[in-house]
Image (tube, rainbow, N blue to C red):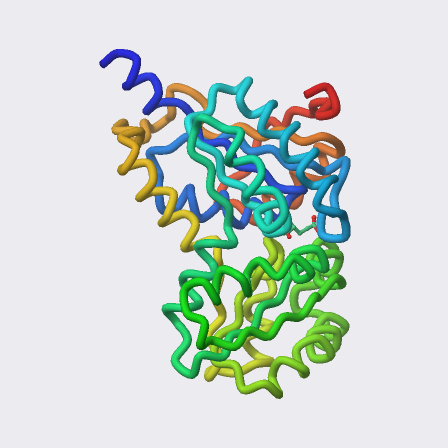
Length: 279
Ligand code: DGL
């Protein structure tokens, strides 16, 4: 009994190639306020979106190894690229639950589409893996999926150009192709893209529903914790007895902090830099 309750009070490990996964962490904070989080952003090795499966699997294994040293009870791969390329491999190696963002995103898109034509945008590696397409077809083979890599979006978001005319032009060029396909749902298949939501919405109009996998991932995590009987029963204390959210990066902690403070509903006080290659 004692042992079980200490597992319930352990943290959720959340990782991403850098800052983008904070859009997923933010949803977990909103939806599961009792849960503590250990977040790792691989800021030394970002971007993952242009790297191979072997590399992403190696990085993911190292990060999971690190998160295990922080006594986590479950892991969320907040990065779409790592979810698409590494989840299948690493989940077989773990004895705690792990989920990614791609499966929940695919599931909600299938539930959303009415005309069975779905668009997916993401990094080059995510799109080339065709993982969203595969998971959508598994649920409903009659759906047609149109995919488009949008590699310039991440640097534009990190530059803070969320409403800039340059970003509008880039988005128009990327999305024109999908708009001609008569899609009614568009999966924002990269951690950074929810931050471009209003710009993309302006461009695609009200007839296309934008699907943010982060919401669904947080919901799915909540169900998983209940199913496994490892949800934290403690209401968050005010002020908290222990730091509920802890942040680690592999480089550039200050830059991470600035970006994080623009995304999260509160300011992060400490960010620890670690050498991820040691894990
Ligand atoms: N976090 C990555 C993703 O969601 C985007 C940034 C990168 O390329 O590393 O795919």
